[in-house]
Image (cartoon, rainbow, N blue to C red):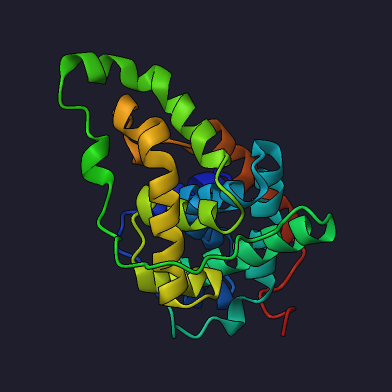
Length: 234
């Protein structure tokens, strides 16, 4: 007998948009919520981890964020992309946890934010030697990102690792676009000399959300929402 997970996977042929899936979940097809989780797991994980700086806690944040999203699903009105709406929920959950512990102090930046050219070009492995070293040095890049101050890490991860636009990053983090530009500029400056130019590691490869972790989070969330309603958060 097929499980809810296998059923949802089987029908994910890319034809269903996020809003269409949301509508069908609200109409009672709860197993389809898995499609939304699997589509956005990596971004949600990377964003949560950028804030909490711990893999296990990032999974906990994801799990709670998905439960929160499911129970408030009827509030998604399409004004923003579903990925933005979902990421904002994860950000709020992660920040709430950190602030309760007094462990989050966003840096106060007052500097020119005009230098916001992408640093992705600097991360490409253009020689066999660099390519061979990428796997080993990727860990150093992840470590360096973790050393960035609060407020800079999540901006860097959303913009440079996830490739989100300035506008979407601002929406996810509930800050202005100017704040995003300023924080990104500072993050790039902090990383460039210390690690990036010397490693050649590719930013999109860090903090990967591999299949076993994906399956674990999905299974936990499906168990939690089994007795819930997507209208219960109204």
